Length: 116
Figure 1 (cartoon, rainbow, N blue to C red):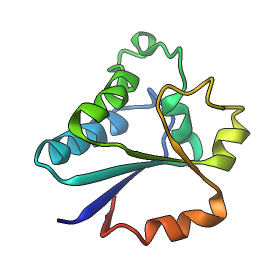
Figure 2: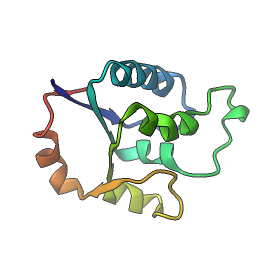
Figure 3: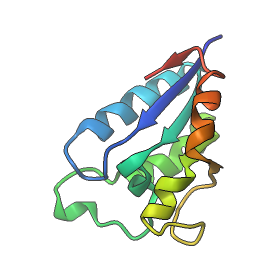
Figure 4: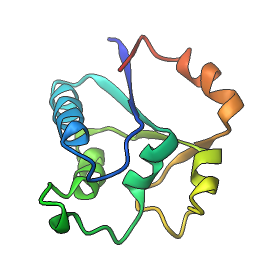
């Protein structure tokens, strides 16, 4: 079985790209694929608590991220520097995450067969 890593780089509620990516992630996970997520750059904001997606007319993607555990997606990684740049810490984020320094991300990527 292959290991898939999905990289999330976009801010929340900025179009439907994240919603579509989540659909793919959930589909793959439902078919017992090994799926992990890495939040980089503006993508770290996807995990911030107290979001209000109704204003943008888009789905509540944070609720979908919270449901990933039900699909056995448990490896969630976040770029430590990006989180710090936005002033995010454990109190601001909604999911249990593995923090990785930017310089160690290339080593993390080597653990995966397919990166999307």
